[in-house]
Length: 276
Image 1 (tube, helix red, strand yellow):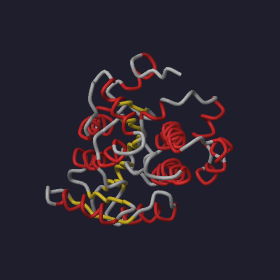
Image 2 (image 1 turned 45 degrees about the horizontal axis):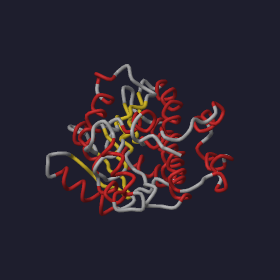
Image 3 (image 1 turned 90 degrees about the horizontal axis):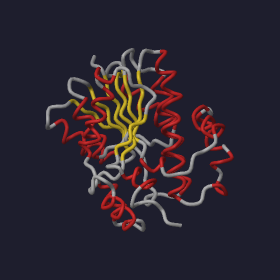
Image 4 (image 1 turned 120 degrees about the horizontal axis):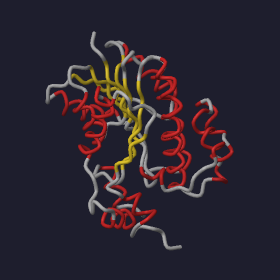
């Protein structure tokens, strides 16, 4: 039996983190597209890792529980990397809320029930959640603590209160960050830690979809005018994950680290500030 890392989302960011932290562990990759999971598993197995691929739909609690059960066949779960999700150009409002908001909440909750003592998790949210105006403390608390099965019934998440797919995505990512805070309290009772990383524009196939999508010019302008003057790489996100998931980050839990080349800073106080 080995310690097990669960990785959801067979993409560049998830793989970069798994390569950094998954040595010596059994890595179980869950992705809605099994072929994608198998492709990442092959790359990693060919590089000396021990990886299995499982079909997993983040919008389904049953599918999440199945992934956890598969992972437990190999040993105790000691790490979670949640990098699954859909972007505003890839899916309608309902799907974004079901996958990015509800699914992430279920995953953090269910893994938190079985995570090994000393275990650690990271979930990937987005700079996008930082752009939206502040919610009320009451709304934040609802996003943080509403039982996962009731989340999609919240008034603020009803179709008439969600403007478009970008707004749905921002709400989902804000919810991820609040959820991490609330779940970190529960994970702490098991001696485990949970944190969130909010990346800006990171060059991945998903981001390239966005560059070529309806908001492509908006994103290109964003990384051109942010202090870093460029998009980021998956390995730079993995640098942060390595801190959060290693003993060096032992005092960090319930936190979100924004890694966006300064785009959010520029949005509020620089060249990216909205004019209207």
